[in-house]
Image (cartoon, rainbow, N blue to C red; front, side, top):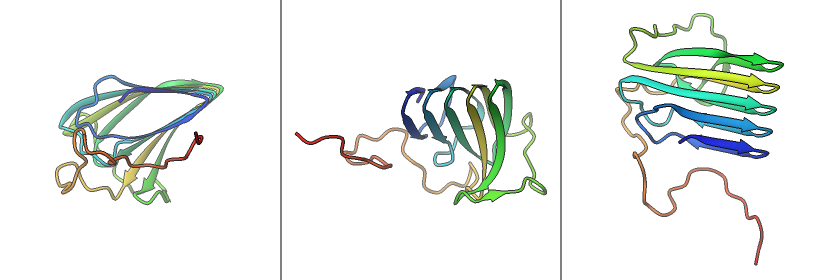
Length: 155
């Protein structure tokens, strides 16, 4: 699931239950990674996000333990709360899970140079254990793409 965006935009919807050293790099572009659609397996998961003159947004369910480290040089590394329909929330009164005791733990290393890395905690997503319908690990079904398509050119 790792990817790089150079002068373009990429949107990922996670279909994996394990995230091991996934890397997202945006240079003069943007990447949005949605981890709210597929439950992650219990245990440790790791992601690194790097933005240079671009942006990386990582959407994670509020029901997992999260540890973020890294930094920014003439950029920003932000952490915010939103509802499942993307409305902003105040973090006041919202309980964040303890990283060490959470069954699902995600470590994110975020680095921004003249860019931004946003971590969005999504409230209202079903918990990891009770998700009734999850995306398949991988799909070979033609036409199973989710997202927006545009016609580039006609022959």
